[in-house]
Image (cartoon, rainbow, N blue to C red; front, side, top):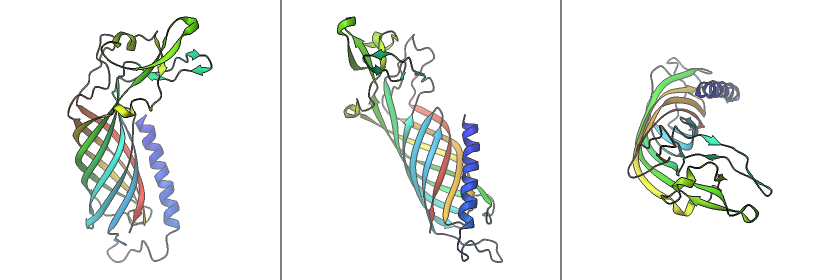
Length: 267
């Protein structure tokens, strides 16, 4: 799936790059004897990242050039962290005029990561001329704050004629019900559990190949593909480890591949 998303992202950025550069004023993106063009001092971009397994991250990055081919930056992002064993169940149960929401069997917590990073981007080749692509790499590390929210399910309880739906989170007392699909109606509203969020401090690091489209444009457009790792302290169990969930393990270490699309402004 990431391969197809990568192709779509590249095609999108190429189209944006061509469109934006055709509209540049005549005094921008000019190349002299050095072929280097206009160099901007600052850059800010907004990011959308797709990571394995099925994680979605949004963020912002701000940096300053310290050399012709090097930029130091800080970033902030918020995204999901999922267990690779998560599988959505959509059984379309009916209760009155209500249809059940899809749920993840064996899930006990939802985990979100708030990351603040400090890093550097460097180009390996000369910056691209108009409509070209500059190739380089970036790396970053910094603190991570995990936000652990209980995962609630709806259960149908009571006799057939007097049944009601009850929201419950996982605990040792209702473990059997949580792992019995015949008793689960569906997922509860996402807002349930917001007042029960607990914090898990940690750190993260990532490294990526960087592709800048129109490296001298005022509009910053780039694509990154790389590897990211998070390590969180404390119990951050996402899934229930049980004989009914074979192969499920909870680890404090989260490793993922990602594709990151960035668009912003230079000045």
